[in-house]
Image 1 (tube, helix red, strand yellow):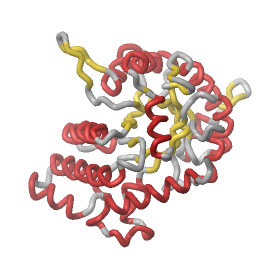
Image 2 (cartoon, rainbow, N blue to C red; image 1 turned 180 degrees about the vertical axis):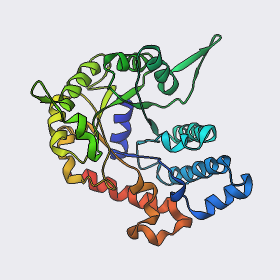
Image 3 (cartoon, helix red, strand yellow; image 1 turned 90 degrees about the vertical axis):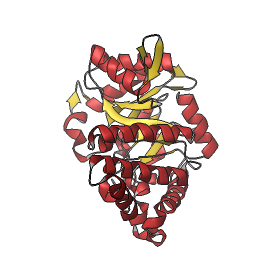
Image 4 (cartoon, helix red, strand yellow; image 1 turned 120 degrees about the vertical axis):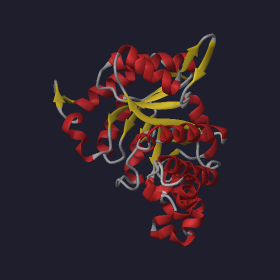
Amino acid sequence: MISRLIEKIVKTNAPVVVGLDPMLSYIPEHIMDKAIEEKGESLEAAAQAIYDYNVGIVDAIYDLIPAVKPQIAMYEQFGIEGLVAYKKTCEYCKEKGLIVIGDAKRGDIGSTSAAYATAHIGKIKVGNTEIPAFDEDMVTVNPYLGTDGIKPFVDVCNSNDRGIFVLVKTSNPSSGEFQDRQIDGKPLYEIVGDKVREWGEASMDGDYSNVGAVVGATYPEQGKILRAIMPKTFILVPGYGAQGGKAADLVDYFNKDGLGAIVNSSRGIICAYKQEKYACYGAEHFGEASRAAVVDMIDDINSVR
């Protein structure tokens, strides 16, 4: 799977992933009003509005980028209807040729972890038929439970040609409460990085592994260290833009081949029409604002590759 992502990065010249993380406060009034008119003030209306919003953004940007990253919590808040919108969003993005990275941060042990892997990147057998559920191409995974939680995902990566991104050093301010704690003279994030490299050796796909890592743009010094620890690991980089990460901070996240990392922006793209820089597009043309923001982001990231 990672080879497919790399092919699309090379083709688009855009090591960029757009986070489809819709909140109702992001959605233009005309989209929300139409959904409420059709379905009333209901969870069904909310789910329809976020799906229509996603479609408008994807239609505007799909030719510019290799991948999208829907955050499942933004859909789960609307219950079953929200999960239906999540599934429909994943399907629509794949129809447009995009790699879908499900941001679910799943992690458990044994059969429970295997069930999570099946739900997101695998297939469930019903009678004699194997059926994908959410059918993302890749998914984010929490490593806190160790190898027992990761191996079932790696097994599915190998059987279904899929990928994962394991949380190593996250972009949030309090990440250091655990991730920076010293253990045997090393911070925990380095120990996790070592394990990600080890897990990845069991699922190589060309020069890189299907087992990737999440390393926040907000911690460039740690990112430099982790790049050296995990040379064959593709890094998913959150924290760019709205969280304060800058392109200049990301130089060391990429390898000398210009690959090795893909940078996420969520609010900075999907809410572009609300920013002063892109306000000229207006809410009616929110997709065009998002497209302009993607072009600017690609130029910014490529300036440091």
